[in-house]
Length: 387
Image 1 (tube, rainbow, N blue to C red):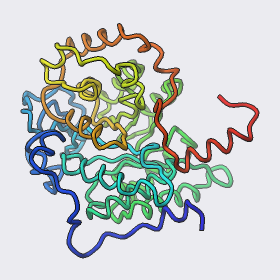
Image 2: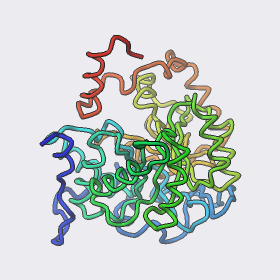
Image 3: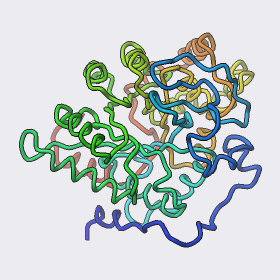
Image 4: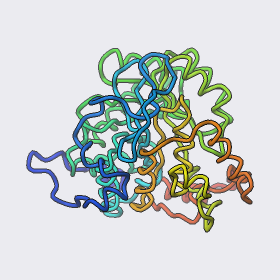
């Protein structure tokens, strides 16, 4: 049996009692993002009035007048619906890709902590190695597989032009790996792969009730013109794009187009895959940011992103519970206004290395020995050329 097959042998949600493992005490809840975190667990995403700077149904993008307290979640409304999402989600690229028998406890702790803190949005992909299976296994322990808001992807071509069998199989495999019975909340055409075929297929899958929403995604700014073109003509529900305090190209066309068309925006790489933290390592958060309620660099970077009125949810990934607690803290408190966002950006531009983030390797000084890393290293040894 291959490692890939082993990762798919995950437990189904048990009919017995929920896991009696870790439950946060009051101090841990506060550290994870506020004393109200436990109250939201199991409450449902659409319950109660929206908090924070929320986008309403349709194309309206004006923030609400509600100012969240330190214990209230910052949420955004999915355009064209009444469903609210917490503004910070959980990505799984590399961080959830581990070989069988490794990292299982860490994955479970990350998912438990995120859920207890009020997090509901999870992002994954079939090309993230074992990430889908590990996320599904961790969710099964909490019996939340069908309660999560899951954004997944299809990366597929076919045996011939317009062949959709590979894409159909990809979706079915993702459902098995995630132990998911309910339709996936969002399925993206991953990195625009075979986009001319996959987007029409996603529309068909939505019409058939097999997925709830469809979208496209990319992380590389060089592909943003194509991403924007599809956003403008593809009748999409969601776009996922790379956006951070360093990489702001999405502001030029993608974010305005999403606002104009009422398309939800999920943000990948809001922390630049740990490269932002590398640049600020050893430096304190500036006083002006602390006075505005941002006590860690994670809050600084993430609140800068979710303060943009087009952004629905940011998707930082981590395998470190302490880092997760900092990330989810960004779901509470006040958000910076445009003047503060500009001040935050200018401050970082004074740091050596900030302008070089785009050329740094992802996850500096970190190691994720999963299926993706193993395959990458195998090809690196074989190939005479490497980018």
